[in-house]
Length: 173
Image (cartoon, rainbow, N blue to C red):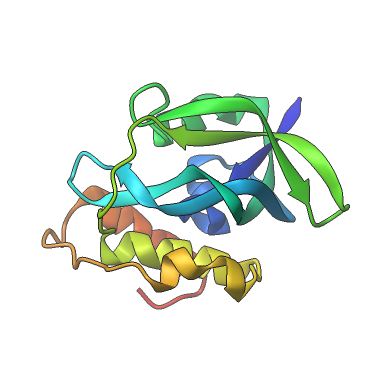
């Protein structure tokens, strides 16, 4: 069995998601009305991660991926399901691939804080994933207005994994 997953942060970069969930295959762009994306989810390292936030008059764009059920536990671990994000198994998005509403799996932040700053490598994963899938520039204001912090730990495992995903995408780390 497979399912559709709506990625809106660093998992938009195909190589990043495939490192976590090998079965992940991009389906195309999607949008959810009444939500925005911003760096509002606090990470354990103090940085900000992408999170969907309810906001009337907003439309959040992201990428749909098809994954095999066997990859769901790995995706839950990567998203810290139940600790950092809650999994929503019936989130509805408009798929640009077939112009219809699809029920998907996505993750919503448990805690939301304003003023968080992503690390440079995390911001780049989000930006390159959006670029890779041709998300509309009008939907990417959250990436453009973000204040980014340079990660002081060059050997942080998450940073090294991010740089490897960028390299696998053919991007210079």
